[in-house]
Structures are given as structure tokens and as C-alpha cells.
Length: 299
Image (cartoon, rainbow, N blue to C red; front, side, top):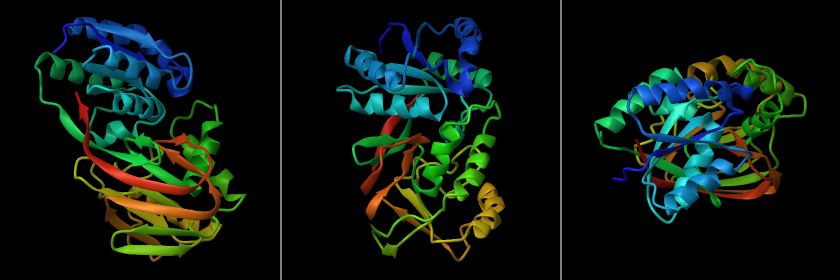
């Protein structure tokens, strides 16, 4: 294992711009816990992904990312695009921390730093995590197609410091424009569906948007993804399902279908919105989704 300082990538704009103010405390905690590190601040979207890939190709065998789910998304893509393998550490400093929650990383970032430092010092075994892939990109926590992607896009443009509540506001705003996708075909082992949908979520972890337990049975180290799709429903029905979604109690509802999968294919008659780990993607009409079992080593 390399004796070089561990590159630690920080997104200073995470948590609506407040993460940058955490850097002095982050540095002090790591020094106090005897972790030799180098802090690198991202400058723009995609910067973490590019820099992590480059550092691993130059020899780094461990990297750490401090930020929200968007930063984790970039980090995972950087790790998996590299020509060499490396383990990833995660410090949840962001608006959304769904991946950290799925990995039982402490929700308070200071506690997460101390636990991570202890694992590094003790050479604790890496935790192997499954990774999803949609078309050419990887996702750590989940992929969403349809209404939840539309909500994500709306929430991304809300700059109020209200944490995960931005996604709830996104739900209400998103309903004004309609919640149904164009006609599509969804195929997976053991089932298929043809027609419009409200949403399709392919989950590696159980939470999305910080407050919606979309796939309560999902585990990111079980070798399967959890497909949850919602057939066409009205705005009023969306409102009725919201409390159940927040409690993970929606799976037995008549409009909801759940399946354990390793891959699925979606073809729509027109481009539809999608997201990966809460990061809005270009509009596509075809989606090929599969799992990479034990694809990520977590520090």
C-alpha cells in the first residue's frame, strides 16, 4: 500500500456552498487522527471525476471524496474509469447523502471522518459494494427515469438552504407539468411492461432524495438491483403516495411493481428525463442498465 498522502477531493459547493467552510475542521480532524492526506478542491462539475481517474492512473491506491451524492457519483465514475484499481473513502458533506446512508456511514461528517481514519490506521478490510451502470455511466446509489428525474432537475435549481426539503418542493412543482412518461417498453428477467409510466427507479441503495425510501429492501452488496416502477397515476394519487414513499410503505400498493434484477432495458417513443445518483443526465429514449457485482472497494 502506498505511503504517499491520500488524495482527498472536496466539493466546496456541496451543501449549497457550505461544504467549503468545513475544510479547516476536516483538515484538523485528519491530522489529529494521524492520516496523511492532500486536500484537492474541485473547481467545476466533472473535476472530481477527472482528477480521481488521473491520480489513480498515477499510482494512488486509496482516494477519499468529501461531498454529497453528486460528488460520490463523480468519484465512483473516476475510480471505475481508471486503468488501475483503488479503494474509495466517503465523507458525507452534502445536501443528499443517500449513498452514505446505504453504507451505514455516520450521518454527521465529523463522526464519519473519525471512523474512516480508524479504518485506515487499522488496515480494516475494504467493503465490496455493487455498482450499477446505465448506458456509458456508472451509478453508486440509483438510477431514476421519469417523474423522479424531473423532480431532481427542479431541485437542482433551488438554491435555498433547506436541505433535503428541496426534493419535496420539486415534487409539488413537477406535478404542474404532468407526471407521465411517453409510451415505453421495459424488459427485465421475469417480466415486462408496455405503456406510459410515472417513474422507474433502479436502486442499489434504499433511499433517494434524502427523504424517500424508494426501495426499502435494497442492499448495495447483495449482487442485485431493485427495480421499482409506478404505473400512470394522477397528481392526487402522487400526493397520497408521498407519505408512504417517505416511510418505505408503498411497495404493496396496486400501482407499484417491484422486481429484483441484474439488468433491464427501456426503450421509449420519445426522450425522457433521467438521473444517476441525483445527477441529471442528457435526455435519452433508450436505456440499458446492468449491475457490476462487487465493483467498488469502500475504505
